[in-house]
Image (cartoon, rainbow, N blue to C red; front, side, top):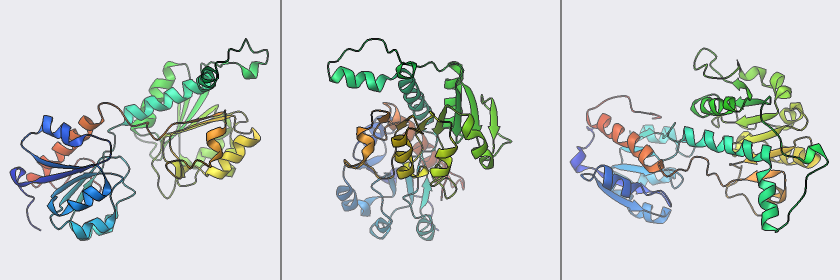
Amino acid sequence: MKPFPARRDLTILAAHAAYRMAECLARRAPDLRVVEARSREAAAARLAEADVLLVSGFWRDDWLAQAPRLRFIQSISAGVDQYGKDALRARHVRLASAHGVNARAVAEHAMALILSLSRRLHLARDLQAARRWTGMASDPAQREDELGGKTLLILGYGAIGGHLAHLARAFGVKVIAVKRDLATNRGLADEIVGPEALADHLPRADLVALCCPLTDETRGLIDARALAAMKPGAALINVARGAVVDEPAMIAALQSGRLAAAALDCFVEEPLPAASPLWAMPQVIVTHHVGGETRAYEDNVVDILLDNLARLERGDPQLRNQVV
């Protein structure tokens, strides 16, 4: 395999509709040659130039045939489900994820959703839009709630789940974490249990937050059986991936009242179809898969990219967040 091109000889293609990766690189590493594409079509037209590709949702595996110089893909996203790993290996194209780059942001978003559900801020916003003032509720179930003393079950106790536990504990919330490797990263959870114990602990939780990656083991994990095991009146928060949840089963649980509320940042199909009943449910908060977006996102990704470029140039076999 040929050595990785010297920094002065690289062409980096930054391909994303929104993130301003080229501007960030111009500020952080002005010696690098960077071209930018704001659409999949524009990116495909410049693939032949690219030694390095900064990309996420635009990627399609058939791009490999159009990119003879491509040696390295730095994913802009933490998720890498869209990349054909075997195809990349066959072409000797390295791949690194942006894992951890938005862990704090996603955890803060999850905490904001939890607070919004507890304080019924989504309903207050609806009333504001309707210019409607309501008095005090005589029915306690219709009042705002307090988080102190509640139990939060976090499914997925990596960087996001660990930071969410830290935030939740500050509000007096008891935290149960579900984690594959029980020997590492104890963090601030009150209890840590393995995935095989999920069904035993779902009935204890007032709030269930999904912070796990999408894998063969987590796909459809929150199905009708899991939803039925949850405490009546519990709320579900999803900042993981839409496919971790059986969406029709969740909608049925919300419609029946078994699941009191949901705050969702990701969905099986994105954008969420206009026909989805989730849009019109007052007990549901829909955010547009923005949990990881912050004003610092480009810089956080570029930190990983520049580290990996240095490793590649010196022939280091291990990349930061290496996938392939």
